[in-house]
Image 1 (cartoon, one colour):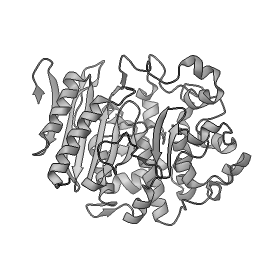
Image 2: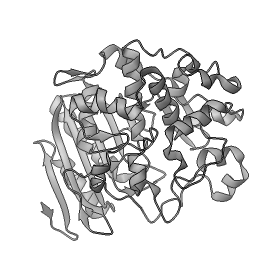
Image 3: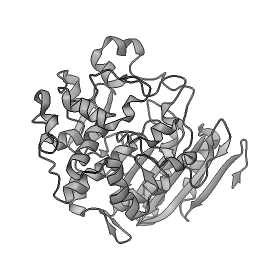
Image 4: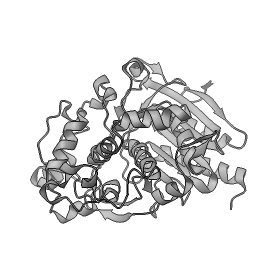
Length: 399
């Protein structure tokens, strides 16, 4: 449907009775908050209560955002990888407390024999960047090569490393653990053990024939201007340079993540692609303890263990409070995953948010193609999450 007003915006999908304010927030994002194209979905008790999409999927061609439009979710991928690890834990094939080298002997090189699986999964492995200088023409698309480099290098001695988010290295470390334990790549494991059983359109490594469905990312005009570190500061600090600029992932003037080769590659720290509808269904399953429509991904007790806090800290590189469980991002006092205090999941660069709200038996996903980096929170996601939370509280009678 077309919402008329000062600026016409194209919105489709549905919002159940009681969720009208969510639709209004979605329309307001397109009209007044600079949204280009987006989708927002919520499930409750496994049923879709919100499934909205609208705007433009490709600014250059004017292609509209359709029901089947796919979106790169960046670090939202980490939540998918965390689930893969937990499934292996649930099956008794992976021990959270064990050293990584038990499953990946080469990882013990250069003094890393004591680093545990849970250290890697909670961003405490002291490996937030690669020491080998990478080129910026797609070298990171080779996940096996990246894992080999990390296995060979020592953990960082810089004290900041113990508290620094592992933006890409998390994926290569955890993805290689899945491969070493199971034999399948993390993308194939996720497809066969999670996406296919639940009927989810989510991939870590997109089939080439689906590439035309992926929306085109764009920077908002203020992108990069409010970052905590300027290029001169990064250039002078070897540690920051490794973590933030090896290689530059969001270079000015171009977004490499729009390339088909990047969509096809398994980049398990940031390269996941899917629909908000599918991601909300997945987190809706996790909000119900890991079972949905007769499909059980893992036992509720394992999932409960997997979302317990392992690390709460001030990140000296991101200059932000972070809290992590076994791969999942969890709430801090700033409630980055919406108003639900028990939320777990993961945000993605540019503004997307994907999470479970167990107390409300809900899964939530917001995906969009205009990349913002608001220092005080993205008003688009905040508006949607507030409206969805209020509607769910009203539906469930939760105080």
